[in-house]
Length: 388
Image (tube, rainbow, N blue to C red):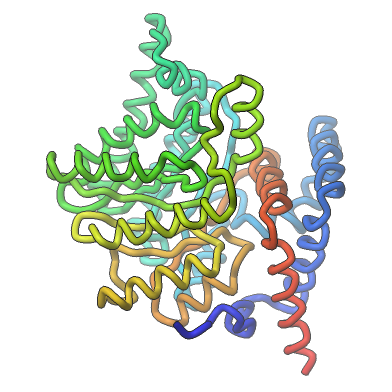
């Protein structure tokens, strides 16, 4: 397989010299765990104290990792990326809400992004988080096998109705919808609910996509069981494959509560789990669809190789590669330049409300070995190329 991800001219073709320098500055900061911790604490304090820092945040970390403060604000970024063949997934990245009116607002925003996607070839997917549409504690209570109070049951019924409203519109508008994965102790309830949506709306093709977090050692068993159910009942399986973003939290909770961690024992085991899931889904691609969300070059090459071995076209609509906006441009833009389907997650929302997402992203970058140093190496290479 030809190595294509080192082509920085293609990777950074949309970045001006100023934007490239900003990216270098941000990743140098993220490279340092102490600086990330200090920066997080200072930012949280400044926002809670209502200090005038939103403009500074907007012009630095926000504009690098986010598309805008609302869906229309994102359109210039969407159109710009699509000139290079890279699609967008508009991701309303407001996290940690607990009120019914906030869940209803997230529902309306998700429906709006589906409308946007229907009108634009550049936006092939919508997306939402399960806890964007309902309280975390409800999912957790179901996962623990506990009974609801009548009030909680009514609240959960509203969560189910929100899911159904989104998935029905996605089906009616023919826009695929990605449902993100979250912490393991709430995920069982989310999985069951997403499977119900697949039963209803994936009868002709994959419209509803769940998320498989492959840093969990139990996920291949789950995928095989879901595949058997889908075959028996006659629906398609859509799945976003990721490694996962809650590793420290998962391990800490398992240690605190004295149960076996759901996380694979090593990075290598996670990588093998991921590649096994990719191969399994390609073996069953006649009734599956894959959104391969990965910043790992080896996993991307492996998927490319498997597609070639199976004579699957590079632009087969059932297979997308996905990365986050502001990261791994060397993968995204080089894949697109070589004819593969690629979509960037494009977070958006009010600066203040998106900060929990941005902080989580910075913390994740410091914990993923090699991610930040690779970004810096590629930026250095492109700076040198431009000087020449």
